[in-house]
Image (tube, rainbow, N blue to C red):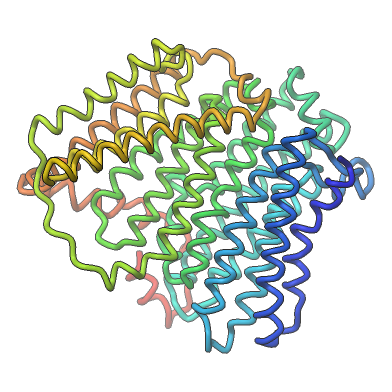
Length: 516
């Protein structure tokens, strides 16, 4: 297996080699897809090896227990496949999207460099490599955000992300230093083995700092403003950010999941921040008129759900959420332009009161069924949370339709098949996560109450969405709409803070202020 672990190094090195190609259009257009295909093939081989033979690591190339090393297990191989596949799609898309742009070679080189560092991050077997790739990938993302440096909204987004990311870097560096000192080694396998049974302030503080770094990198409220303004960058950057980069925080939690499970403070922080972001992001999303801003708030909400699942100890559910959301969001951004050529949708009509009552009834039926199967909110709150959200989404589609019965019956059947596929995927990802999937201790009453509260809030939002055309005529809703549509003015406050720390030149202040 060690030879397979060494082979895995080809996945990031292929992208890094493509990033070093001289900036000649023909050369970069030929090498970047080849690197993407090679990375996909190697990542797929590593996943097959990890599932067949288990985890493996290379020796560390470095000193004092810190350096470069590759670790292959189900988690790293799964996410390496995800990064490789999305990277392939984005690289191929960029060839045509920026055709004729004189700076296309620069963009593709920066894109390949970012993808190579992300691959290096998820395949890290040592704290030294993990911290190095985390920081370097973040800085490369900022370079991509500034590809259109003449657009002031893009500049403001890059500055906000830069500042928030440096706080995340600081949290990760301090956590890594604490883990290295406590375990006496930077090898991640050694740290994971020691962390599952270790106690002490150093371990607990490191777990909380890891959770903090994950929250700051996952665009969680109130640190989310930058992700709303990345629309000023080329569309491939938006797809990569929403489908890949924001998942780095989730990977960090999953990688050190055994350690974090031992410290309720870290779990509580993840669960609380994730719950707030999930509910507020979903609410604000309903009021947006821009397709891409709606997708941005969707990402905030989905990352909130993912961190909430991590806080509940449902790591296999969180991994499924990361993969499914990344694939969906990459497709959504890269196909967002199709909305301009499509037919305008008919004005929505409010659903009947009976249809509105059906949504909470379905959730109650789901809760009863999962409880009978031993997977209810009291036993597996994370699985119940994700299943409830999926059921609410499907019920929103079905209950909001006013179609003839044959078409509606087909939609119901398709929804049932999709929900069944979700249950099968949960079982598959539980097997992927192995022992860690079953390590979560029985959640305390506060965690269970939080999961039930989020499901109740999402049920209320679905009911509101079904009745929204009628509710929009209410004066109270009109007043609330203004505040909600502006995201409770949290991004405005963030803009003012950033401009105070990092003032824009006088010639740019008027334009930048307008984006606030």
